[in-house]
Amino acid sequence: MRCSLVCALAAALIAIPVYAALPNGAKAPDFTTEASLAGKTFKFSLTDALKKGPVVLYFYPAAFTPGCTVEAHQFAEATAQFKALGATVIGVSHDPIEKLNKFSVSECRNKFAVASDADGSVMKAYDAVLAAKPEYANRTSYVIAPTGEILYSYTDMKPDNHVENTMTVVKKWQQEHNKA
Image 1 (cartoon, rainbow, N blue to C red):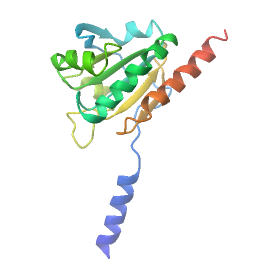
Image 2 (cartoon, rainbow, N blue to C red):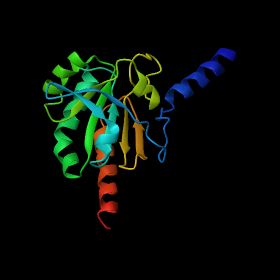
Image 3 (cartoon, helix red, strand yellow):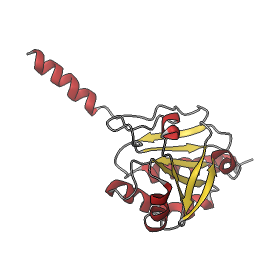
């Protein structure tokens, strides 16, 4: 009887979706890291990117894995729309920059940058660490306003809704800020 109660509680906890810990309205932690766009390495600075408009920052577990490849393709297909709205897209994983140079060309289709968080400091700052394997990032997406405020966060290991959800938030932000 005791086991069935414990097992039921454990199952209930597993069924609860996990959300990104940084809440809407929080200040986004600043970072600068090595990134790759179209196979070329550069320094990505969140502060500099926010000067141009909102930033869609998404964390993913590992380059060239099935879910991460699907998500990269989806962001690549939507990059022109994000750019038209003034938003920058940046993906972040623990992968070394050499691997991301290849991923940025093949899976990101030269459309948006991916950054290396080899020491895990960025994913820790954004509470985007995969609990089961802390050396990997959880699949978490953020939309950050130019003020550095987190407008939206979403965590789900399925890549399906990350692009659609972040696009909706960027469009809403754009509509609110083009009225002035």
